[in-house]
Amino acid sequence: MSVGADILTAVPAAYALRMMCKRLVVPDQEEVEQEIPVTHRWWRFSARFNVAISQSVPAARLHDRESEGVMMRWGTPPGVVTDNVARIGTAVIPIDEVLTSVDFRKAWLYGQRCVVMVAGFYVWQLTPAGFRQPFYVRLVNRPVFGIAALWDRTVNEDDDDVIECCGLVTVPANRLIAEIDGTERQMPAILRHEDYDAWLSSTAAQAKALLQSYPHDRMVTHPVGPYVNHLEYEGPPLIRAIPLN
Image (cartoon, rainbow, N blue to C red; front, side, top):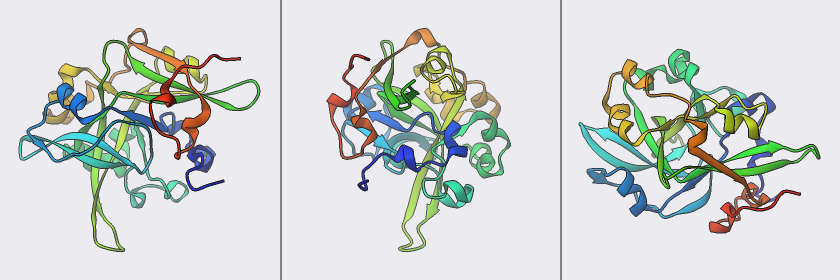
């Protein structure tokens, strides 16, 4: 299997419930800035259709009370998670752990919140034949949307580079996500457009109230080809609907 081969097979079984969202679709920068204007545009990116854990994602946050757009590594530093997931870090953070885990409590209480901007994400369904069928999930009438996330900063011991990274906050799965995968219990914490500022700037208690399961009837999904399982594939064809046999 090549270096770009399916990352799904590299995830320990005990970690599976925390990995419902293994790939993201990122819109182009102009679309993102129309959805969430930022004062300082440090980010530079273009549309991508197969963004995996450990790759860069566009994130909006506050710095000195001003908004800024930056690129962050998707997946928190390996040093703050258990050994069995040290290779990829924590890409998703269940809401219960946001509030209780010592790994994330500091970022939560210190207001290290950000909004990761996406066009959609993929979810996998285990078929009766035993293989995982990918589905593309997006929102109704929202071509670009933000997912609540926590960010952190670490220093690479090899070259002293500062790495900023983030983990997506997750909430209980709604009906749509649960129907794709009957074992799925979590989904990304999708924010309403009008809640971006509150998520970034409010108190911890106020921010917690914004973490809700997105209404299932405001989301749509369709099956896509298996190419998204492999990082060497990229481009709009990855989100094209296919018929199921």
